[in-house]
Image (cartoon, rainbow, N blue to C red):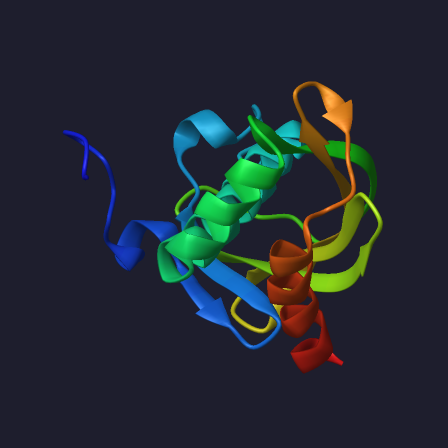
Length: 158
């Protein structure tokens, strides 16, 4: 059941693409430093929104999958374990950026994601992000149905 204020549209959540997810982000004044360039830490927020919306859309498209995962792994979540970031070009106030999140590898209790922040066809930032699957506060092997859903994304991306 939809909660008041809950986003059910894909406009705000982006869209699923072959191998992952893409969403747009507008750069606001608050995202920039005194030079008018996006402050480096704000890219982390953009990428977090991308990862969160990716899982939201996979869950929206596969509600039964997430219900089964919750049964197998109560109170499950994904937490960032490691991140390698290459800042390639700056973004500026009022830019419309696209955050792409692509599944690269699904292993035991973690998923390796490639995230890119782009302006048009130009890659501004590229990051490898390993997220761990956690249930009840402990790392746990990703349940098979979720592993297959995320693995299918990774297979389409290669």
